[in-house]
Image (cartoon, rainbow, N blue to C red; front, top):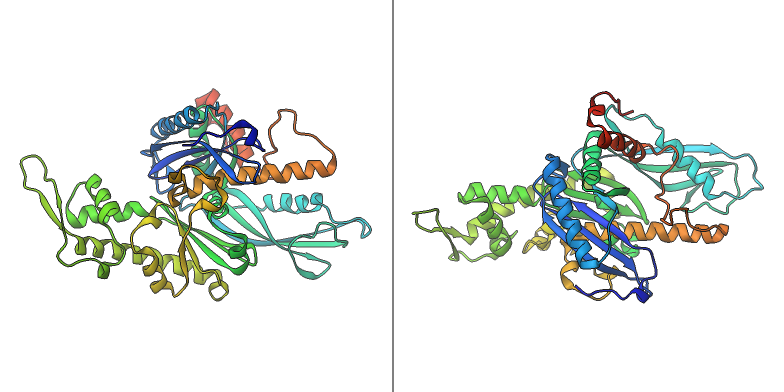
Length: 444
C-alpha cells in the first residue's frame, strides 16, 4: 500500500477498528491537502470470537485485535493507542423521541449550547433494563412552532423543540466489546454504530437528500440505515449475513465449511437462472474418498433462497420505516456480501427499487485499490467519522478562539448525560485492574 508523505497530511491521524463476524480490520487514515482520506496502513485478522456482531469469546477476539493492530502499525509506522470502534448486533434498537426547552431570552440567538442541552436531556431518558443509549441523532428542529428546521443555530426564539432518532444497545455486549479493546492495550475514542459509519463511506449527500437505503451485508449481520431529506430516519440490524449462506451451502452440498466458503466466493451466484445447467465443480474428497461433484446451478439455488429471505427482511424494514415511497435514490448495497455475483439484479427484482453497489472510492485518495472494496466500507467509515468530528471541533474552536485540549487530542463529543461509553470506560478500567470487582459492581 502506498505510503503517505508527511507534508500531505492536514489532520490528526484516526484509527478505525471494525470488529466483525468474519474479520477484524484496523485502518489508519488522515485527511490530505485535497480533503481526501489517505490510508496510511491497514491490518486484518480472522475473527474467531465474534458471533453475529457480538463478542462470544473475549480471548480469541483480543488475539485477533492485536494481530490486526500490529499489521496496521507495521505498515503505517504509527504507534496505535486510540481507536474508533464499530458496534452492531441484533441487540441494537432504535426509537423516535421529541423534546423541548424554553429559553430565557428571545434576544439571544440559539447556540450550540442549547442543542447540547436538548441532547443531554435525551440521554437521560430511561431505557429497559440492560440497555443504554449509544447515539442521540437530532432530525428536525422546531423553533416557536416553525417546523422543518435542520439547523436552528443563529435563529431567535423562546421554545426550541427537536425530533430525535435514538439508538440503544445492550450494555453487556458493548462492555464486552470495550473490554476486548482494553485488553489489547488500546483506548476507545468513540463507539459508533456500524451502519452509520458505512453510510459516511459509501453514500453521497445527494443520495441522503433524495432518500436512500444503505444495506451493509456483513458476515454475521445485515445492517440497515435509511436517510431522507438528509436526515437519518430508521436503523435496524438483521441477524443474518454471509455466514448463514455458507452454512446453507455446507449442509446442502455436504462439504466442509472452508470448501463451502470457497464455493460461494468463486462460483456462487444470487440468480440461479443466470448459471449453466451443465457446469460442474469438482471438490477434493476427504482422505481415501472420491472427489465430490457440485452443480453450479444447485449451488446458486441454495444461495438465492437465503438471499431472498434476507432481502425480504430488509424490504420489511423499509416498509416499517414509512419512507418506502420517498426513497428516490433506491438501495445501496455494501459490505462483503455485496460482492456476490448477480446480487444487484435480484434485489432490484424483489424490491422494485434502483440498486447500486457502494464502495468507499469517493472519499479515498489514490492508492491501493484493495481498500476500495465494499468489505472495507465500515472500517473506512469509522475513520471518516473521526475525521469529520475532528473537523467540526476545529471549526468550533476557531470560532470561539480556543485551542486544542490539553492532551492535544480532539474532543470525543461525549455529552455530560451520555453515560453509555463513559460508564463502560469507568467500569472497564476497574475490571481491568481488579477482575473480582465485576461481580460486585452494578453497571448503572
